[in-house]
Image (cartoon, rainbow, N blue to C red; front, side, top):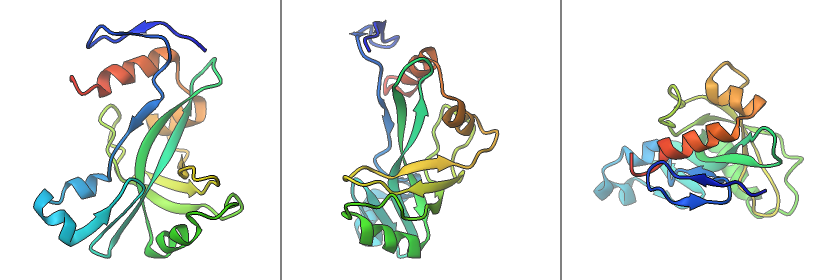
Length: 168
């Protein structure tokens, strides 16, 4: 679908809805001084571990956009147990993982436009074809969980885009 909208920050006009926002690493990774990160763990675009005790996987919190067939995607990280992390790594390139039971995790990014999202309870659902896991939030009354269940309006997507812009 085509949508015409103008960015409130830069004034640039767009014809498609923003697809989402992604975090490069879990907040815990950024809490480590940059000079110490390499000696204390490893983080790539999908997996992260810190000192053998923190295990993180990047996934997608998908929010339906009301009145469209589109979703807004939060690319966030969830911490999982060492056992779940090993299982996820074992299945990373497996062709059919949808039957794998969900893995419990804790959301590991604080999305600034919501009340604290750090440590919200989640379930990670592995997906085939090299798709990042789907992250399902526990069905609470937290605004992010409510939006995941009920969807958000196009206006809300644009509001989020403006708030998450690096110009703010």
